[in-house]
Image 1 (cartoon, rainbow, N blue to C red):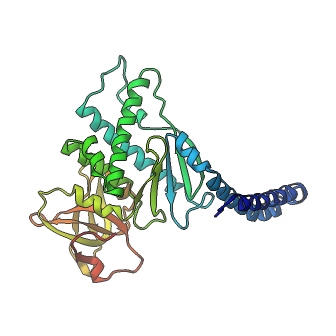
Image 2 (image 1 turned 135 degrees about the horizontal axis):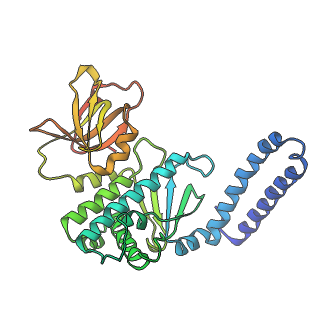
Image 3 (image 1 turned 120 degrees about the vertical axis):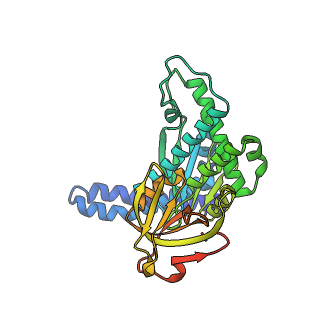
Amino acid sequence: MIRNDDELAVVRQQLNRAEGALLAISREVKPQSEERYHLMAEQYLGQIYEIRSQIDAYVGVAEALHASTNLVMSLKGPRLRLGDTPVSLITRALETFRKGMQKLAAGVEAEAPVPSGKGRRGRWIEKVCDPPLVSVTPGSVRIELGMPDTGDLFTGEGRRLYEQTFSLIRAGLSWVSQDDAAELDAAAPSRELREAVLSAIRSMVPPQGGPVEALVFAGRLVGRKPLALKKAHRAKLQQAIRTSDIAGETVKEVGTMRELDLDKPRFILRQRPGGQADVTCVYPPDMEAEAKEYLDTKVTVCGVMAASTGVLQVEAIEPCVEDDDSDADAHTASESPEE
């Protein structure tokens, strides 16, 4: 970390040397052997990325980008780095964000319908909630998004709907990460809209078993202070949106996901430890991506087992550690799902 201008000058000299070395092998080695050039260049590239990120942090490049970019989503984790992070982690974060915005936009329009424009197509909300990808940059992995362009027909009202919908997301993030309930109470006065906000935020929580530890939101739409959504926030969100009419105990059940029904939506836990009976599981719509991902996989499902029906109301799905069939993991009652 650079602490003063003198250290900045030293680091810039290091950057010049690394870039000079890369240029030298490009001129001298690459014409002789492409394979050898790529092997040698890799070490210099890692060094150059690291040095540039230190310089950017010191001179305020990241802060300036946050102020000028509509939305910046950063995937944080000790093993995450641009160049090493699988595409699936990035696309999952973007897809859960996009679907969460769609759900909230539909709720906003239902409570205060936006005036219909002449010739409006039926899928306009999907277009409004599909912002363009501006760039993917270092900094763990930072995804920069712009403002969606829905064409002349929807430009004004579409922009307002997008900003109003994201204000709900920001309010939900403020509540879960900073215990700031005032913004959420003002943005979502109705019970239905508040539950929709918290459900959308829950769908964006990084999966428990994955390398992403936090999803950090910044940019013009967020404000001066970035808001972080962490794995540990899932329990708080689950507790807040748990329906009060379900009588039962909180449990963990282990088994293999079978018979996924996207219409209900539900699935069956089979191949249970110790020959235990199959369990029918009902999951919320915002967990559809996780349900699809873990189909035919051994998982631990956390939720509330309804006393009257024996149906498990799913709150979290986690992949099982290999060969972990302990009775404690198979059926555990606790006050709240562990994160």
